[in-house]
Image (tube, rainbow, N blue to C red; front, side, top):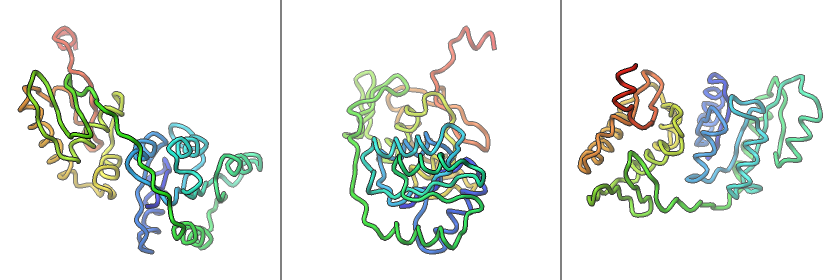
Length: 240
């Protein structure tokens, strides 16, 4: 798998399309945090990362890949601005990048690097999932795929577990459809939210079987994604 990490939507789409045109599976991430979450479930062959991202830098991408045990097997290409100092380029290489490309990126050269790196076998790496998680006031056991509350237990599907993990890890932030589709369904989000609506509906039904009104905890952000947060207290509702 190839990961494209850039906060510029147009650049992500163009690079993913470039990979797909050559038969290389690719996923897009708009920030460091989105990529980092996926490292628990995916072993990447190549990462193409823009040096400046909305929530950090390629330095953070490299550090998190190393922490996840995916360096040096995963090959990293960093894209930097045309006017970036040579010290910035040198730092990327020192941190573990395999290649640095300056703007304007020469597509023919980038394609050759991708072909070379994608052909290199990636070492398998699987992080141990958390034993238990607290979600919507209940306990989730990822390994057993169970959701328990008040002495009742519901069995969850693997995709329900992955959705729960993303909600818990989001820490109150917005989970975009781009992140949800790439990390759970393994494909790009193309505007149709029906698959995620069905999955959220399934998780909501599982929670309801335990007496948990899950939609009190999940806010739907129109055309953007979901936010997981504890329900408002009656006092807070009254003062809103």
